[in-house]
Image (cartoon, rainbow, N blue to C red):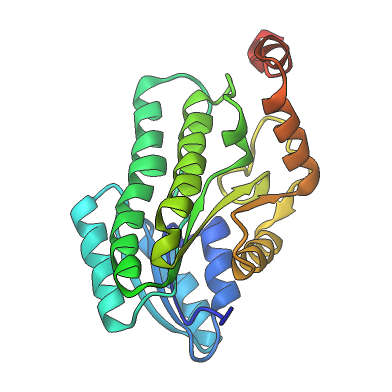
Length: 248
């Protein structure tokens, strides 16, 4: 499969998104980078330009449906998008309603606002690739982070469904399910983070998986296996394993 030459990434101002941008940056590559933090986004864009890539960055909010559609279609007009990575997302623990709604707005609506314009153009020309950022937390509802795990479960199911729905149109869809990656989202977390890996290593794993058109890119394998087994357990037994830490 030819390497993508025009790549659009949301949530590119830090973490996995920034690492992916730097990974793909090279002469002859055009990057469309979106993020909420303009200053950090500019720094990532500068790094990518230093590696020879052409970069168009935009500070925008993925929950703004009209702005996202306009940005993605404009980028595709300049040069057809080969790969779109809907990476933007936020985490959070607890059961606060306002924060739960913010998580769903960014993690789910943001993915819809990224995916639909990209799919529209890719399906019309019969080619392209879309990757959605889920999480191993999406394998099973976690009482310490109910909104986060539920939002990532929605993204996982959406990617799996879109892969089948758009296959006949020539569009490849993959879901990315990382475990713990050293990013601002996990920094300072007051909970165990087994098999923690750095963002650059995560970007390499993701890029290799996308190049192979893998339906699901779940890593590290040890934690992916553990979460898969957890999801397969009878619910009552699973409840005992994932009971809230604050009650232990």
